[in-house]
Length: 566
Image (spheres, rainbow, N blue to C red):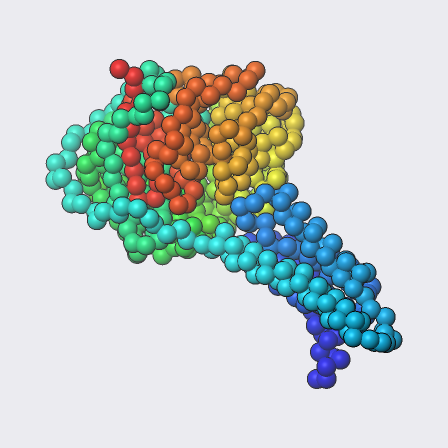
């Protein structure tokens, strides 16, 4: 193949890959393949611009410049979209300048040494922006790969798993238990009252453990479930999903369970889903799709099932939807050919399977519609309402986001459902019935990647923004109209729960804030900085307040604070 033919192919290659890119977007290929194609298009387009410059193919240059603008893979970095848009514009302007300012006549005659030096200088200027863009793309590609497939390294104190005490205390219940994701009513509200409202002197640490994750990068993000004197929290080692049951009063290990589980490694192989305590049993759901039932008393494994055996399919970042126990069933999102599966909570036998499609990352929840309990499933492509007895789909709405990430649990207030997703998707309020929905409003006032909003007296309080940076907005929005009442950037980006007529927020750097919900103004009551000390990775796990105690989990670490006033 001669040089001219090679150059033609190198010029056409970005166009071919761009066509593949469009097909990839339409076909909804997995995110890691999609971002890889973006990287290829961007890098090859830079080289193609250089070739078109030398071969005087000026009309083709806008195509490659457009490719740089459209397929820049830098967006997963922690900088905002606006910053990267500015970078894109600057890069594009440099390329345009390369065409119009540095263009030389084909029949240029060099008359003296001064022109030779100028020509040499101009060529250097041409190389500088191209080289800068290539460096940015390479760095951005690496960061994009980390954002998708990276696995956070465990840091700080990591103790070996101790032996259980051997003393099994009798099962108890508390006045304000937190037995599952989002609490006993699934609304993110704790029934604890009388909390400390001045944190200027700190909070008393009652106990701490540092053995929930073992090894170098076996990260688990699950929150805790608390019932009386039992606290259940998942962990992970090199080969096994781990389940720990601690004494919620003093942190002593009552029992530990495990099973071998092969999972993906992006952002850790450990569980994301929060356990569900139901009387004398507790249910856990691992990243790889294993649903397990344990005896809460002594940790005996009563049964385990893998949703993939029923046609389920693990989403890109692992099964994350916390299980829901309803009557005689435990229900999970599975994806694939069995989007939702209901198992008999006693035997583990499949009772029903419903729908097909991509699993979401939000927990399945229930709500009363016209006095009858129904299920809400915020899956990868929308929101569906199911009949809990047989899984029949009553209605469904489309809600597409980048990479099929619907992760925030729908918030319910009467017959109104509020949903939100990140990646600049936005939010929507729906008036629902058993037969369908009525859209009240749709906007981008809240774009929450995976921080659950809380509805208090008809107002939505919650974080808006992406979870990879501590630069978000905490907002109050009127549920009925979508009107933004106020927003603040004073408390970073994080998670929130409601307790004792206040909202406890924790940002991803483990700073705690106590906020008084008021639709007229943002009121920060008190704050406490770095409760976990220095954290090297985002503290994504939501705190829990149960029976007068505050539990904060970060990777292998779990700390219990006294949150009650004297």
